[in-house]
Image 1: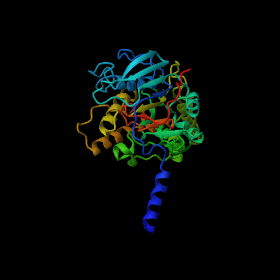
Image 2 (image 1 turned 30 degrees about the vertical axis):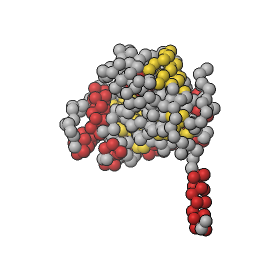
Image 3 (image 1 turned 90 degrees about the horizontal axis):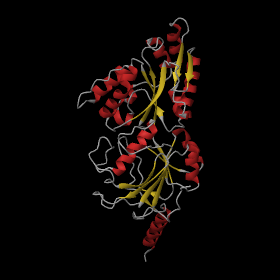
Length: 385
């Protein structure tokens, strides 16, 4: 054999040997996919409302897995158990088993079943990933660094959840445009993205992310504490702004505490009220809104439907189709009132075991790709306790 050919074959061998385990493996059928979540889904009945947003979003994903046309229950003409999976076991808010549907028209899922554990704390979910007791779970964005430090495999979507500060109409200080603008200028979005979101999120100036609209860069995200101080000085009586947030959301609490610091640096009096169900009337509230579509017009229309009644902003229908200029102008008209103050964009983050293959974090409005996921390596024992 010629020397050059020998060297070439040797080089190819080295490259192939360096490829990650499973790179050349073909997808295979079988196994139990173990899924954990913090949400507690009460029912798959479309007539049963969930108690919080987290459970509602999880229920929508379950519906897409078990209903025939892949749409959420309540908006679907499909029948239950005609999707890629069927419900084999259901213990409301605690445990479920979805079995592969052999008759699914688009092809049987690779895994035999999905074992789901609900109501697991973030700490327990990370520990179960670390000790190989689960295969897929959601991870709070503020815990990504901790997960990476512990060697956990992490997968993040494009930023698709907006954290905003909403000023509530009818409250005297919230009706003062100078107060709203002063708070907006005082917010250090870059620090929130870098330190609280651990650089997994990004500062938000508009109502849509750059990847969806292409115009997010036109909205400023820079803090202007001196400008905020000047505006606040124009308001007599040193009013106090009471800020509400979901007391059960650790991220919202941390951001609220950072907003107090930002406000204080500009001489603004900001106080927080954590319990959203408390009788105390707040002037503004932190709100998290998930995109429902990857398309800019549909995503903005959904935001306006949700924010319109709360913040009294223009929620009239956008033209269909709408141009980039029309979408941008609607965004600008709303943001410029400072009734809705964008703070940061967050991705959806998932932790994966080493045996999970072909997982792709879903875009807004998409289903978890659990029908396409397959398991590499020997089957693991059930994570159920």
